[in-house]
Amino acid sequence: MKWVYPDISGDDVLEFSEQFRLSYLFTSILLNRKIRSKDALDQYFNKKLHSLYDPFLMKDMDVTVDILIDACKEKKNILIYGDYDVDGVTSASVLYLFLKSMNESVYYYIPEREKDGYGVSKEGLDHAIELEIDLIITCDCGITAHEQVVYAKEHGIDMIITDHHEQSDSLPQALAILNPKRKDNTYPFRDLCGAGVVYKLVEAICKTLYGSTEKAEQYLDLVAIGTAADIVPLVDENRCLVREGLVRIRRQDCRVGILELFNVCKMDSQSISVINIVFGLAPRLNAVGRMGSASRAITLLTTDDRPTARQYSMILHQENEERQKVERKVTEEALQQVKDKYRKHLPKAVVLAGDWHPGVIGIVSSKVKDKIHRPVFLIALKDGFGKGSGRSIRNFDLYDALSHSCDHLGGYGGHQMAAGLTIKEENISAFEEQFIAYANEHVSNEMLEPAIYVDANIDTQDVNDRLMKFLHDMEPFGPENMRPKFSIKNISVFNTTLLKDKHLKFAIKGENGSINCIGWNMLEQFELIMDPSQRVDMVFVPTINEWNGVKRIQLVIKDIKPSIDGRDKRQ
Image (cartoon, rainbow, N blue to C red):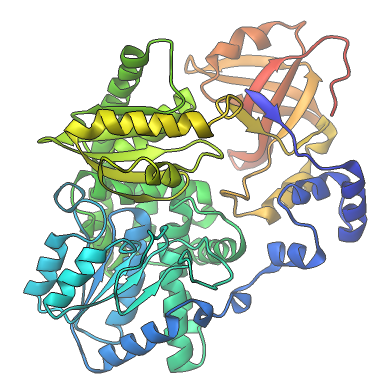
């Protein structure tokens, strides 16, 4: 991989190092995250709930609050319409629990991926009609539901939309629309996920009814999970919401369903991180929506009964195991299709289609994208129709690509890095041609080269407890605030072993003895580090590994290559 270092001048680092009263290395890390003032520094490390933006700065918030307070007072039938991913079920759970505390006549509906498709469906609206619903509130969907809003209105149902996806040219004619990405919105932070938008709504209602947002804070566990799982930028409000939500989970001041889900994951809730959510909780919460009904995730997240929570956490766990089997099969078939279809001449974007389970194509498209480093769309076919899910590479806007390639689509939605579509099977070839043509114009050869972004080149003596304390203070990590990666150059390794025939384990000399290193799935580099005369350069993430109650620094290797002998390679 190409190693990319920050384009920051040494003079800038020295200037801000003095201003921040931090070391050269720590200042470099912060400047790489665009922190260039004392105010930005204070907000980064110390932003608290009381300093979040006023929820009433969001367009239509005042209207939405008035409608919901009146609807609850009048005991109107309210339906929370969520989505089947983690953001959708957590945001729907927050709003359901909160409004249910004010009005018993509150229900929820989560669409089924295969039956309803993405977004607000006619099937879901017909369900609302049967329940004699007066008001529907969407969570994490609805920003393009023009026809659905009209259909609901024709049957006497009003709609409020809460969403965070990109809008089309016009907005649906709903009573109110809460979305920080509205083209006419003036809210200071546009990168909230669906759960974040709902939290702002709950904040606003609490502020109106109680003069304080304290009652909203009980839902931060769900908001943190939804935000972390949706891979939105972990900056500004998102960073604060996730950090405070993690604090509540660590002290077990959270839903019993979350604690039971940790139990089946064999994870310790007291040391939860964003990584635990993304790779532990989220796949299980997603699995029931991918393989069947996501409403089971809502049951888990809203129950107060521990036996029920235990039962449903096991259901989610079992569904995830089944999802993994299906995912492995589809991944193998998709990668084989890449080889058969394109041979050695890969275009700048790839479209694949097959008789695949629609519940796993998003995950698989991400895996294929990582493998070939190109924007990828996977389309699951059934009865002449396809449902597609795409993943993008850095600096390529997938949603914009669909906007310019939509002549043959039934519908589409999403954002820069991930998007979905519906299409007739007969139109796939024409769409592929348009999509690749757009990619040819917007994807440079440099963008196709796999790269790893390194915060700084350091020496082994820099890997110490002071660095680990600083990294701990930088948490939570996520998009736009990724865990820092460092490089060390021209070093020798020792005690090299191979774990399970695929993982590298070795050590390097540190400030106070040896530092253990682990390289997951790096078998191809085994021969390189087995040569005692070969010095190497490596990129790594420093972590804390605990074994038998002893905590030690461990470097997780991201890339490794031979050093050029006799040359000073420090940058």
